Amino acid sequence: MLVGEWKRLTTGAHGLTLRKQTIAFRSPSSGLRVTVTADSRCSDARHMRGQDVSHRKADAGPTSSPAVMFGEALRFARERAGYTQAELGKLVHCDRTVVTRAEGGQRPMQAETVASCDELLQMGGLLVKLWDRVDWQADIEHPDWFQKYVDLEAEAVAVRAFQYARVNGLLQCEDYAHALFSLGDVRDSPALVKERVAARLSRQGRYLQAGGPLLLVVLHESVIRSVVGGPGVMRRQMEHLLSVGEASNVSVQVAPFGMSLTRLPTTSMFLLVMPDGKEWIYSESLYRGHFSDAPAIVAGHRCDFDLVRGDVLSVRDSRVLIADAMEEYRYAERRAQLGGLAEEQSQRRQRRQLHRGGPRIPRSRPGA
Image (cartoon, rainbow, N blue to C red; front, side):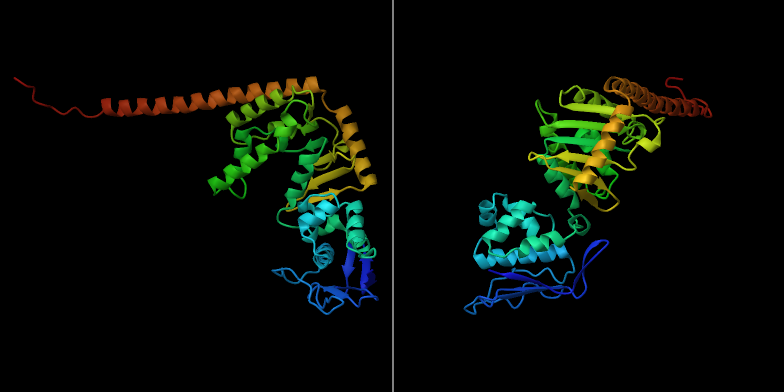
C-alpha cells in the first residue's frame, strides 16, 4: 500500500501553494515511487518488476495547478491498476465524465467518490489527502467553466435564481436568446450564434415540462426594462415569461427599482439543489464562474434569497408589471413600424413633388 509524502507544500489565504511544485509518494514494500511536479508529471514511476508505467499520450505541459496535480495522481493510479476511465467510474458508481474531468483538473469528485477510488486503487489515503488540500473553487479556471454549471443544472431538483439585467437562461425565448448571442463574442459567426441558441434552449426542456424541477426566479426590474433586440423581441419575451410562469413548478417574481438595495444581492446568483440533497451556490464574474458547496455559505445565500422573495412583488403583482411592460413594448413596436411606414410615405411624396414641380418642356403633339 502506498504511503504519501508531502514536500514543500504550504497553505495560504488562497489555498494550496506549491513552493517548489513537488509532490512525491512511494511504497516501501514495492519500491514504487511517483513524483508529480510542475515540470514533470508522474515521472520516474516503475512497477516493482522495473516495467514502465503507461503515461498520457499527450503531455499538456508544465503546470502549478494543485487540481491538475491531483488529476495526474489519479490518472497514474488508475493506469497502474489497469482500468479505463469508464471501468473506474463503474466500479466507484459514477459516470466516466466525472473521472475524465477530475483527471483533467476541471471538476472535483465528490468526497466519497475520491475515498472509493483511493481504496480501490490502493493509494493508502493519498488521493483523499491531495483532494482535501486543493481549493477547488479557486483553482478551476478553464475555458469551458460554464459547463460545470450546465452539468449541475441538468441534474438539479430545484433552482433558485436572482437575476440582474438579463432574463434567466431557463426563461429566455428563442428570439431573445438569438439577440443576446448576436451581441456577444460570436456575433460575427451566424453558425455559432445558431449553435449557442440551440444549446441554451435545450437546457430548458426539463424545467418547462409538466412536473419539472422547481424553478424559483426573482428578476430585478432592470431585466424587464433593458431592451435586447428591439421592442418586438422584448414584447415576445414578456409574453414568454407570462406563459412559462403559469406552470405549477415555476415562479417568477420581480424586484422593483424602488426596493431597498440593502436587501438585494450585489450580483446575479443561483442556488441549485441536487438529488442527494447537496446544494451549490453559483455566480459569475467577467471571465469565469464561481462555485461553492460550503454549507455555511450556501445556507447564508439561501436565507438571503428567501428574505428577498418575501420583500419583492408577489407572483400576481409581478405578472401585472410584466404584462404592462409587454403592452408598452407592443406600443413601441407598432410606433416603430408606423414610423418606418410614415417615413417611406413622406419620401414618396417628396419624390412626386419634385417631379411635378419640375420645368415644363414643350413637346409636339401627335397629329398637330
